[in-house]
Length: 231
Image 1 (cartoon, rainbow, N blue to C red):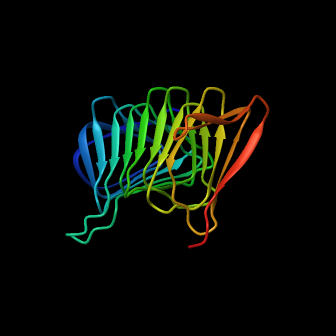
Image 2: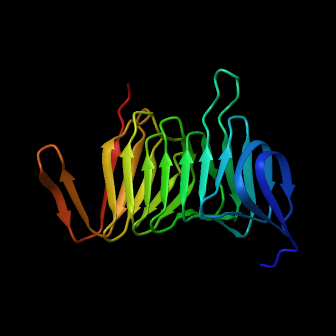
C-alpha cells in the first residue's frame, strides 16, 4: 500500500493516533507509556526495541501487515506504582509478522481475523506473567514458547516450527495443529477446571521423556486431547 507520510518515533511515546495513510517507523529504542494507536502499519527495524511499559498500550487496527524485525517487549504489571500490565491489541484484519523477537510479560490480544505470524528464525516468548489469546502461525525454524497463560478457549496455534509448553499458570483450553517436522514440547501444563488442549496433525510421534519410549507413532491423521481435571 501507499502511505502519504511516515511518522517516526523514539524515546518516550506518551500518545499517538496514527491514521490509515501513515506508516509508523521506530527509529530508536522507544517506550510506550500512554496509548499508541496505529491504523496504518508499524515497522520496528532490526536492532531497535519498542517496549510497552506497564500502564501503556499499543493497538494496531487495519488490513495491512506490520513487520517486527527488531524487538517488542510487553511489560507486566508494576505493582509498586499500581500500574496494570502493558497491553498489545491486534484487531480487524491486521497482520503482525514477527521476524525478530517478541517478549510478552503483559497481555497480547490477537483479535484480528488474521493470525500473528512468527517467521522462520524468529522467537516469541510468553513469560510467566504474560497472557495471550488469538491465532498464531509458527513457521518452520521459528519458536513460540509458552510459560504464561492462554486466556481464551478459541486460541489456536498452527505449528510448523517449535511450540514448547512449560507453564505453571492455569490456562483455558486451546487447539494446536502440527505440520510435518513440527515439535510440540509439552513439559508442564496447568489447565483450568475441565479445560482441554486439542492437538491435531497429519502424523504423530509422541515420545515420553521420562521412560524414553515412543507412546504413539502413526503416519495417519491424529487428534488427541490433554484434559484438565476439576480441583
